[in-house]
Amino acid sequence: MQATTGVSISGSLHGLLHGIVPEMHPVEILPFRFIVAWHGVLTLAFNAWPQQLAEIKKRINDMPEFSASPENFGTRWPKLTLAALNADAPPLTLDQLRKLTALCQEFEASLQRLGSVTLSNCSLVMF
Image 1 (cartoon, one colour):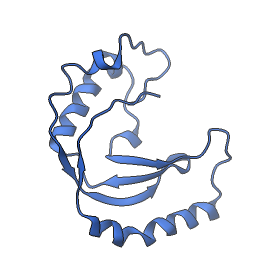
Image 2 (image 1 turned 90 degrees about the vertical axis):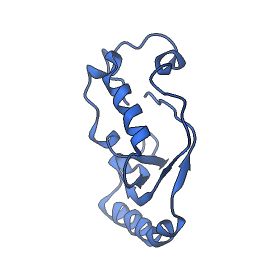
Image 3 (image 1 turned 45 degrees about the horizontal axis):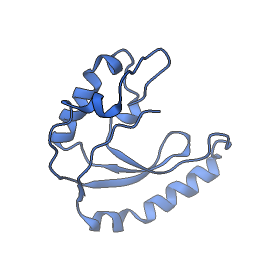
């Protein structure tokens, strides 16, 4: 979730999450593909949010601290950030984007053979 200017978050993150994140049991999630996302961020996308995580995500989005600012499109789908450019780096050129996308596609078959990934921790990241 992204806290935008004007959104006031008070208390610790632990305090905010208390009662929203239930006692979590490990969940299985299926890798979908590597994707070069916004600003050249390399991500591992998953097929879908497991029900348990979808419920936690909804509770967080419904909190007054977050409901004032709509969720960005890129945070609506399940993914794991693998790498990002420095904030002061120039954007990827079209050629760089094509090369990075091609590299991602090379590893998709191997990724599919991995099967599911077990998630056992839940974190709220604010930036």
